[in-house]
Image (cartoon, rainbow, N blue to C red):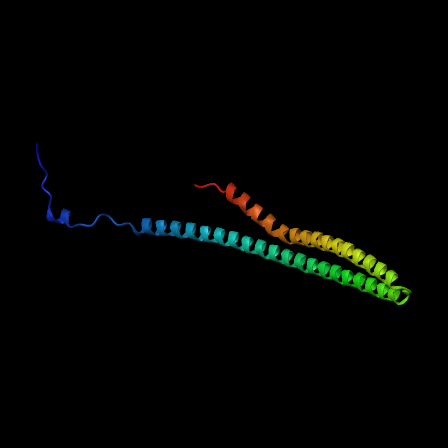
Length: 154
């Protein structure tokens, strides 16, 4: 077998360096980076817009619900006030202690029933407002979870 003698020039020489290949590779890398950055920005922008819409809807619903609960509370106070004034007028016409006790007992019984009715009504309204306020956030989370499930890992 003949062995080939390696010269010093071959040992210390640089392989062929092609700047065009490096430029093409760098350009391709940069273009991919820009495309990925644009895609990521687009997704972040869309997500931020979705979150903003969800927050706006939630706040609008909460405001409307607060107004509804406030009006219900005012109506409850109005009914109670009218009931008390009617009772006071009836007490002014009492002719005996027995009549006053009967009137007072009847009034208290009606007030308890009325307050229970108002409490149930207020509780139902508060439950509905709570559900309405939570609805946009719940929908956003469900949408996000669906999108996460649909993402294919490369």
